[in-house]
Amino acid sequence: MRSKDLKAAGTARLLVIGEDSNLQWSDTATEYAMFADYYFRRFPEDHGERSRNVEARDLFNHIMYVTLNSVKPEDMYITNLCNDYVEPAPKGKRVLIKEEKALKGVEHIKWILEQYPTIEWILPMSLQTNYWLQKVGFYGGDEAFLHGAQPRRVGIECIQPYYQPVDGKAFASICGNIYDANDYPAKVIPILPAKDYPLKGLNEEKYGKAYERLRASFRK
Image (cartoon, rainbow, N blue to C red):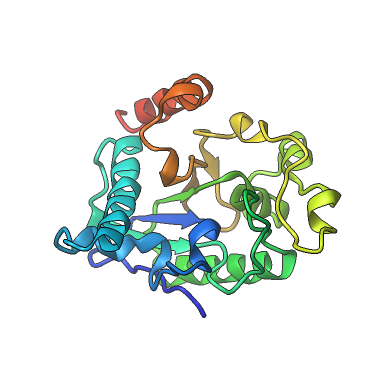
């Protein structure tokens, strides 16, 4: 099974790259990446449908928050680094995106950018997504980040593989930074997954200043 991209209904100006691995291959598998299509539907009565609608609204509200509403939802293109089936992780662990899946995902992202040259910003979500994008040279190349975000052998070699980074705090070093995409005229801005919006508690302590700096850059 593959989830689909939600293509921009208007002029694509911003590309969101999610991970979506906790939901994609469960009983609530999504037809479109991150249930993004639910944002454009009427609020449903069914409880399960409502939760998907809320998740989609959190996604778009998150993006509009960090960009100061400078990009309309209709001008956003939504995809995942991996839209294919991946082996489920043990309970409480994060799904591991293996290298061959990540490479396939990066090639798809490059295809999107070639098809939609109007895209100005790329917002990859989550530690693992940004690890692979930097690992293959799509942007950045911070050696300290790559070391901290690389998957531990304990997770890779498990009977049920899962993603556990060397340093779970590695994302703080790149979150909200603005990078140039290699070979494409777009800016890459790593942000938290939509499930972490709005920022509160420890996330607000860790990432609040980074988000304020990012929002300030959109005021210019």
